[in-house]
Length: 307
Image (tube, rainbow, N blue to C red):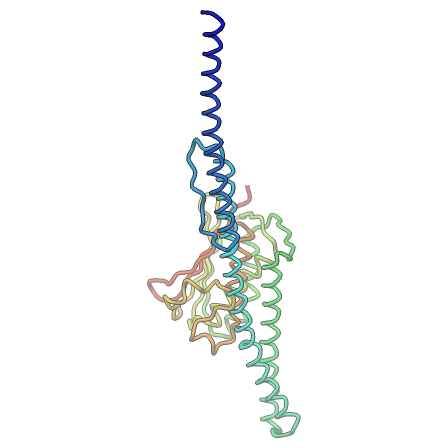
């Protein structure tokens, strides 16, 4: 083989390489054009646009990354729209839950100031006005708590606590309320120690909110609280023998400011259960509610034990 043959082979090889590179560059150019078109489409607001790519394409990593960005942006946009709708509902509920009792409160106080009522009737008006003021105070405090939770601005101090002893102490403070409202109560808590990583104030708020919900809204006359251990978790069950919760309302009761139609006439503010759920989640636990087969509602909390 002389040098002419070698040169011809080299030229043929170079020609093949050039054709291969030109083909690759053409494919890359096509892919870049598709990427540019997709980016323009996404920029216009079409977050559903995705870039189709083959496994052997040189731009596959770029395309995969752009698809991930589009998916993340779409998810954030959906969450933002949901948050905007939630805050619109929040403002609507606030106008109802604050304006209505405040107007009523002002009316009672003006009647007293103008001396439209005197004697025993005046004392009755003062008591009603005081109750409405306390309700507004409770609502505003709950609203502030929710806002701090939602903004992640509330600090928590998790420490090992004996949940059995702590829950008994909380229930002891509720006995006068149970007796005043003619509630029977049944408590099933072991005398043995059971330690959990808890924020003391947050746990007290969880139990207090659930007990208050039962007293105010259940229309029952019995409350039961049971604490049991299952594997590495502690199960807290709070139940009543009341009217239960409408199947239409049950999926929404932990939403902020949600109130069933019948509960609008009660002294609830639609924040207690939402706050309880947020505090449970902060303890890496879960909470749900269900209607009992025998009547009433049962709230079930699962919290991880301290290991």
